[in-house]
Length: 254
Figure 1 (cartoon, rainbow, N blue to C red):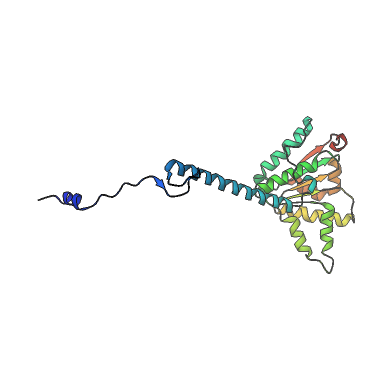
Figure 2: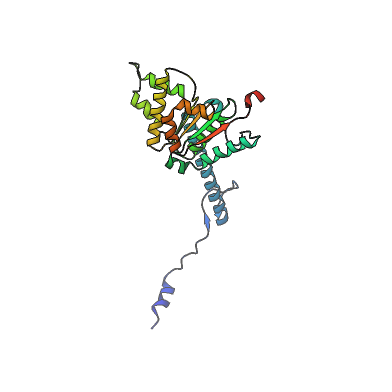
């Protein structure tokens, strides 16, 4: 008696062997089937194109976020790379700014602040904006504004036609992961009102462990006197760093 396997061999047609060709358009523009190697080349090209599209979309999203952060147009595209560090002191300032941005994940947990103080035109705002741009690119929220702008925002809530109330404006100043506050030391408005606003904002951010970069055309001692003992105690409690900018103005040399 014949084995069942022998019968199956005679009565079952052999399946045709699958060929490794695929009915899609060829990369060389010709018609016909793609070989496996050509299909792999198409797949690599498609993956690379998808990667470029995703990178472009991410870059556009970052640029929109940076634009919304209030960075002045003059400093919008300033970076660490185009900061001119011609002296040891300038290189130290650049290095500290880079390290602050690179280590922001830990800084965000600790709430460490950064005080950039010194003469005008020495690159304080340049480095602060470079820090903020990098922090936003890394996925954190950020805001740049001057002390006078902060005061105007709060005063605007007193108008009957105001679109925001004081609580909402205060949330705008205290909720970002990083706040860059420029022109600290400018005498604008009522001194008691200015000091109260600064204290409320910085004290709230202190309690929430949210870092702040303060920029002022002051010496370290003048900055401390301007902010007052209560604010400085909180900043120092967070392990804040003061960076003096003592060299001559870049603008005058230009």
